Each structure stands twice: as structure tokens, then as C-alpha cells.
Amino acid sequence: MATTITPVVGATNIQTVIFVKLGPIEGTTYYIANTYKPYSVGGQSYTALGSLVGLTGIDDELRVSNSDVGVVFSGIPTDQDYVNLVLNSKVKGASIEIMRGFIDANGDLEGNTVYTRFRGIITNYAISESRTQFSEDTYHTVTLQCSNINSILENKVSGRKTNEQDMKAFFSTDGSFDRVATLMSTAFDFGKGYGDETTGSAGGGGGSTGGGSNQRR
Image (cartoon, rainbow, N blue to C red; front, top):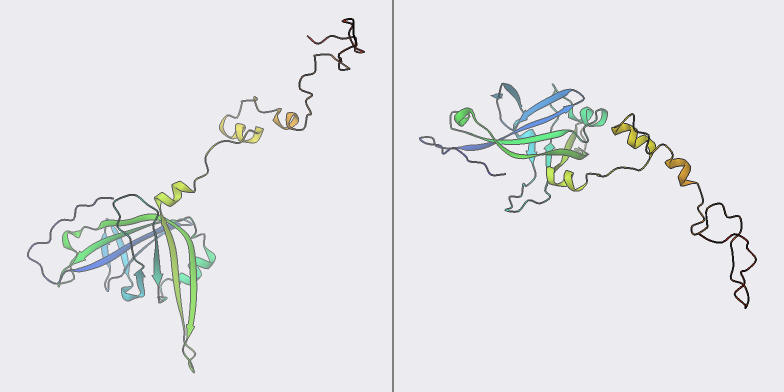
């Protein structure tokens, strides 16, 4: 997607920051940023996780193509246990939007504006655990694997099933597929005349007919 970024005038030491809108997941939307203080964007306050949240590389291409990105939580803050969130919630299939903003040397968000960097869904997650030798401390890293909308469209199942249930799901009063199950298990003798009990066969010489008395019509 093409995004026009407003030029920053009269400011130095510009830094890039990332804002992540995660969800809704079971009715709750999570707003996360890799900043060191909370920011309010679009009326929503983004939790500051600093270096505890990161991203894998995002590809910029001229043509639309499949692209995946990983959102990495390398520390678990006290106000939200992200290990528990991914293990006990339906995170797969939840929507995610990654936005980029710019802050100046004073920590102000330039123009109070962010720019969409990635939009897609969560397709998988991974949890890794590390433990320092001779220490009781355990460190967890949660990675959310996300795919863009192009991947979603390629994997979309389209079409209809030719059964009664599928027809009723779209048209509850339509009975055109009601006998599909019966017809599916019925054997058809194609080529047999209507009402024929035996099949006629060609007779001998003299132009006489064979043993079957009923002629094909």
C-alpha cells in the first residue's frame, strides 16, 4: 500500500517507533508500542513495552505478494501475561495491524500521526524458554507469526457444495437439492428404454428381431 509520509521540519534526532493493534481476541483488543512511555493514537492508549517488543523484517515490493512478519515479545510485563494469552485464547485468526510513527528528541510523536505498515491476521505462534545456568530465573519469548491479506485470499475456500445442508444455509426454503442424497446412492442403467425389463439384441438372418420383444424407442 502506498503511504504519503508528512515531512518533518525543524526537528532533529528523529526515531522510528512501532505501534501494534492486536485483536480483537475474544472481545479484547490490545494496543502495544515499542516506546518507553505510553502514547495515545486515535483515541487509544498504547502500552509502552520498549525493547520487550520487536518485529522481524518487513518486505517492501512493487508487486503484491505473500509476506509474513513476526511480532516478538521478549519479556512478559506484569500487567499482561502474553504467554497465558496465546495459550489460553483464540489468537489464531485474530487481526493485527502494525503502524509506524516518528518521535523527536523531546519524545513527542510528530504530527500525532501514525502510518500503516502491515495489516493481516495471526496464523501461528511460538513460545521459547531460556534459563540462565545456576539461576532460578526463566525467560520466555512469544512470537506471533502473521500473514498479510494476500495470503488469506489465496487460501480462501470458495464455491458451494451440492447438498441439501449447503443450499438451506443460503436459501432456507429452496428444496432443489433435497433429493441429492437419494440420487447419489441410486444406480442408473444408461441407455435402457423406459419400462424395458430386458434388453433387445440383434437377431439372425432374414431381418427378424432377436429374443427381446420390446423394441428400443
